[in-house]
Amino acid sequence: METVLQVNQLSKTYKRSHLGRTKTSRGVVDLTFEVRKGEVFGLLGLNGSGKTTTLKIILGLLFPTKGDVKLFGKPIPHHDAQRRIGYLPEVPYFYRNLTPKEVLRLYGTLSEMEPRRIRERTEEVLKIVKMERAADKPMREFSKGMLQRIGLAQALLHDPEFLILDEPVTGLDPLGIRQSRELVLELNRAGKTVLFSSHSISELEKLAHRVGILSEGRLIRLLDESEWRDRPGHLEELFIETLEQSGATL
Amino acid sequence: MIQPAIQALAIARTTVIEQIRNRLYLVILFFGGGILLASLLLGALAPGHKVRVIFDLGLVTLEIFGLVTAVFGAVSLVLDETESKTIYLILTRPVSRATYIIGRFLGLVTAVLFTMAAMSVLHFIAMVYDYQWFKEFTYGWSFHSVYPLLLVMAGGKMLITAAIALFFSLFASSQVSALVFTGSFWIAGHFGSELRFLIDRTVEGGVAKSIVLAAASILPNFQYFNFRDTYAIPHFAGFEFIGTALFYGLGYAGFFLALSTVWFSRKEF
Image (tube, rainbow over all chains, first blue to last red; front, side, top):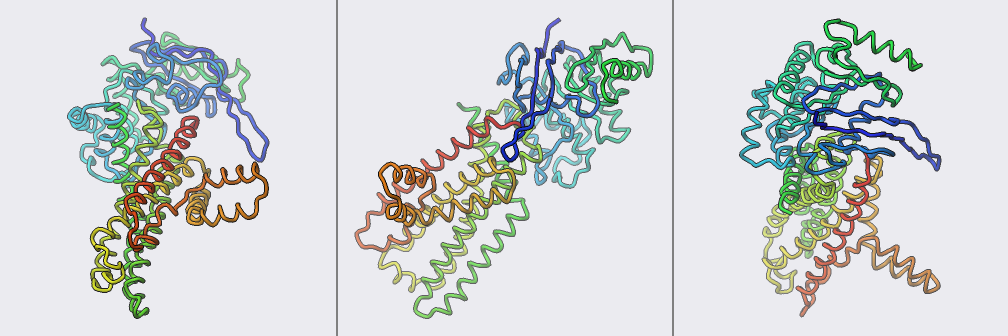
């Protein structure tokens, strides 16, 4: 099966200097995994386990200390690979004085889309995330859930093959969570590959084909859907069991 | 080559829109306009020098409020953007970090020049109010050709100021330090000749003097732009002066933009 993302022995050590003293802390350690074309891959872990660090390195926001990452077979950062990904941050922040249409025009241009295509896709994605009525309102008036929807709209705007979602259901109400889940499933059915991080086990259980469990920066277990399918709640048991076996602080 | 230019212009456009819709920007514009109109009153307090007061105070106001716009624009758009994480959605797209810096710079300069242009209209009105005085003050120079040139010179200073403000917004860890660093450079830039004179008088030894002078040359030299101090001199070689100033302005701003790009390319988020 074709591989969309390859992460090989990836490590990240943070160094922070203050008054001449340097402190180091571990982000991720020797991380190796791959995401295959057409699958939904979930990164599961407690707070501070390295999920966001991993995603940020893949996206080029952080630089690895060791190891390498390949997106669509090309070492990051790669211009062509970046055109093929869509990213939703944990809490999407936007320019407060701009409207959704204006930010989508900006992100579309930055994604090298043609102006006509931007206009067409703006209408489409705003409809998908049910925000067409708020298209011309300044985003300083938006709630957290509305901003999350616009975040999803910008991630889908250029019709990327690979979606990277960082805690996509954080801040959403129950209806928003359900709509977000249905959208991810629909996108996946349409052939999109999805990598998402979450500490919501129930969401991963419903969405992911495979799950990587992260603890203290290390990938301690890779689980396949067959291990929890048709057994509601079993992923949670597997997660706790894995953390206990690894000696992680619970 | 075309795509980075399109992307930079898109970032510049967003920068201008964000800036113009910012309440702080509107407050700055309002106060600047207020001071310009107040110059009419101050001019009335100086009989015989009315136009000079309006003229000088107006140009200084234009420059100071241009500086304030550049600094607050850089801090609120660039420093806040890196802290608020809006930058994630830009840098995860196929956009080079150099393109981002150039786009932000172009937007910032446009917003500053827009501020100055809006204020210069008020200034112009204040001067036209007493045209005869102005004509005498300019020693026969054409009113219409001198004033735009003075604005071009003030704009040249802003090119440099915006590049410095952008650099410190990327480099500084807080808004206050970005404001202080940029303000210090702006003040030092107006005393470049005095600084060089002091170095010449106080630093002994060829090598030591060269090192101190080289360090001082990092500071901008706004003397290149002080057209308003010299334009009234008869037989003044205006275009040579303007050419040198703009060449210096572009070179200096380019140097700081290059520094910003190097720094920004290594920055993690």
